[in-house]
Length: 62
Image (cartoon, rainbow, N blue to C red):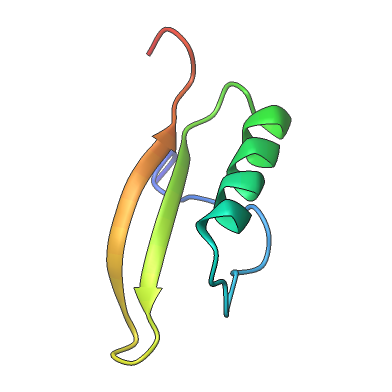
């Protein structure tokens, strides 16, 4: 099971209404972990399901 799990950067951003807030966190995560894949996941709080997931950053040379 090595490499199958992702760790969370911080607590979920419940109530986030501005994309700029997400971009700030993405920038901080990239600075802290420059050699890591960074994935962003979005949830629909009404249906309580994941509605989007994508790789936002990847290590150089990959």
